[in-house]
Image (cartoon, rainbow, N blue to C red):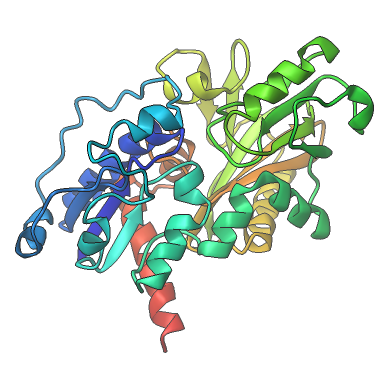
Length: 352
């Protein structure tokens, strides 16, 4: 089987994606698959008769998998291209993808998870991992995914959407502290905890740097968990505990020795753990996710709140889903293969 791993892209999570992409590529190559590793935004200079040579089992260099904690702006990402173009896909990306049996989407963030690249691949009849176009778009947009939660009676924090930073507390149906985040985004980029009126407009303005809408959310003080689902299997919950501050971009992806993970948590009541896994599956289905994904939770007392669904969970050395899979006896390479095989089976079943 020939596989293209797409990573990089043009979102604020570009550096995270590059790390995931290298790990995924080497894992699949270790399984004997012929894999072409491509930066979806930069593309590659290659002639038609040379494309097959890109598919190899030779490992990529993993010496620089540490993720830079600088958030890349559109301007900085666009400057990486030397031809002056800023389109979604770089040179020859689609041509290379057409030579593969399936594309493994190692992308994260807006243009990797919001349905755009999924729509392009659908148009060209190219198979890819993860959820489809509509599910990706809804899951990525926190406003629409919240509406789905409400309609399906899935408990979630109260919220308010704004397109302007000139918002006042009396327009918000809950009090301080509250959370603000870009409506479309991930890895906590542009996310802040707002403690009082004096911080409100400045922090909303910062969130709006990354999207045209910002989501204000009731602050739920509680324990933070995540549950992944792969090929119908609900993995053990993983808890995130941060010694200082909160689980922001730096805590997620840099080696700061302040974040601890436990899978499954020993002091979590079994009935709560099972309820969380059941709610993960219900949320997965409500968002029409397919093959695999991850659902994030907050637990306050015995109340479980769904935060969001992730259609392309991180696969970096510090990511949550690989740790959950390991706790369930699934190694990293086996997890990548499972993701490939589950989506291939869905494609085959849909074509019968």
